[in-house]
Picture 1 (cartoon, rainbow, N blue to C red):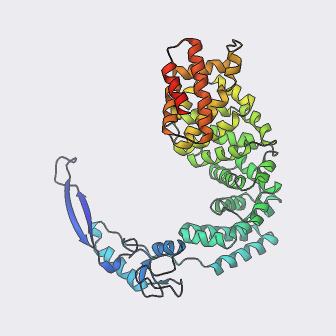
Picture 2 (cartoon, rainbow, N blue to C red; picture 1 turned 90 degrees about the vertical axis):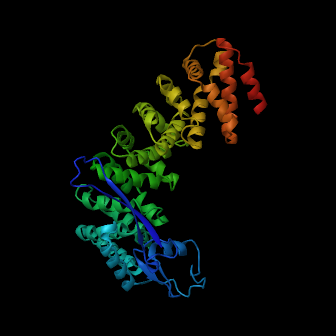
Picture 3 (cartoon, one colour; picture 1 turned 60 degrees about the vertical axis):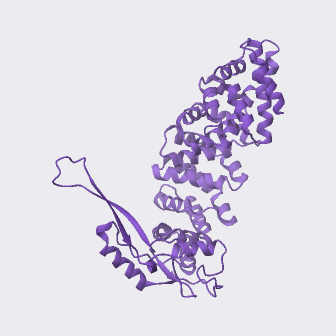
Length: 448
């Protein structure tokens, strides 16, 4: 097997430092150093019961995908045990050192993966230390679990599968009920570990979703350091996605709205902003309790913050921001605040067909909610805010953009809203005598 490497060396004697010498060199990698699955140089070679050696990451993925045979021999595996091939790993490391001048680096010695027994044992010790209120001991054990997770994705899966999330949730609730400020370091360590342990089991959900735990999460959102606030937002987002009951409990806690909006207004990082938007999305989803939260978010200036995010946000953050804005526009106060923003129509039209299918559907839904009362009021000759945004939509080319979306295709619900929007825009064009719209509207009728 041959790998081509381009070596770039700067000549020390060359007077012009911008000139470089380029050369193509081909390095032969011994065939038995490469994994039969990935064909890449092995970093952690392990041998199966069939005697064939693979890179640990590749063969684990093969087995996790449901394969029960050896990829090379096609024999049914009598055992899924993976025996580290230390001699081959040492040979690969030595070969890397010998060829360092060609760009290869010595492969670090991999750590032995954690076992189910080790995880179960440390969970038992965490439970025991929690019952005895041993804060320092718990913190030491939680750090060990975190270190396991940092070593590899396999370790993370092993930790999660053996119930560590439930144990840490119980530990979090126990120490949160005593003194949050006193045990802040421990609680912060637990939060940083829980971020990658979702979905939790029912026991873990009930512990982390209790009033005590939710109050502690909100406390971290408001007063924790940057890392703790980010972890609290991530845990809240994952928790709210599991059960509506957690949402109903969270909305009753004082200060949660201000804390989540502050994460958007004063962003820590994109991850924290997305987590905060998703938490708000769940808190504003249609329900009797959540509808009361929308005016509170509106008063905090969330609409203008979302418009600012949409102006230059990436795909992921735009989709989440549009989802929140779609919920906000279900409320009269939310729509009225949206009418006041001069950028909203232009931004929504721009997002159609420019971000993703989901962003296009959400943008159409928001426009439909903003425009839906215009047809009835226009008959009375009212020059209201809704009429103003419809005219603005025509000015920024909404009619043509929506026609293109209709031609490209979309979901049934979005298509129905598109039909109403196009009829409404056409009505406004005729009323304002902008130009002859008969040709365009004939196309709309044909499309349906």
